[in-house]
Length: 320
Image 1 (cartoon, rainbow, N blue to C red):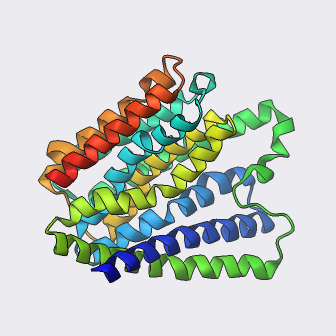
Image 2 (image 1 turned 180 degrees about the horizontal axis):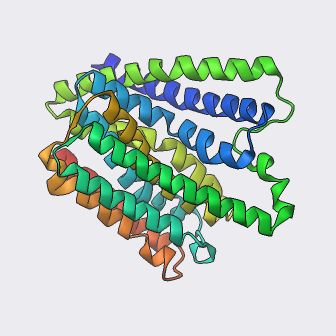
């Protein structure tokens, strides 16, 4: 049993490190071959940072444990709002009243409602996957158009595009780029295999479903990069980064992760998702309304409330 926990932890660490390596390698390679920074940020960085969740969900589908795939996405989205925004707010107030994230937030809510509607079909098959990926493509196109218009209106920012990208290093040698790519491509499937296989063992030992493991152990683990990024952003008073990180991650989880995993194989929807977890995810998403629309800052009081709500959610899931 202890071995299963250790191997799960090792798999998670490998996933996080491999995902980071893949982003660094892909970003620098793309910029070297002349792909614009805007396109890199909207595609390679976004997909690269979601690579651990994607590999876990694909592996779960192949191993016929769809509860881990669904739980990973639904649980991560709930954790991203309640935990990833709650804990940093305990350390420093996030001045979200200064951010303009309304359009991105609307896209996230639309993605959430589309995901819930498709879940009521009982399975995420190729039809549902195509619908999710078409929605993702439309949102990426809209984001690219807005970003391009913004940069045309402020040409001074255009030269800073590449420097703002996560993992960009203009002095990185070619051998190092190749090393990062190899480490990422080898480490991601290895980490996913370790985590999914041993998480399944833990679920059987404790007599809980793979869905519960996906909603808790796997979801919290794959939310750690977002938590680290948001803590740093809060301490640096970069509320736009913190809020944008959560909103963007949630959209990609819903549209890209399940969209791609559903093409690998059908993902059956546990009825418990329809009764409880999907609505908790939607409710958590709507808790962002005061920060997005009403000019509220995420202060320590909000941090306590959000973190307490997540603790209560975990208690209900594990007690059930």
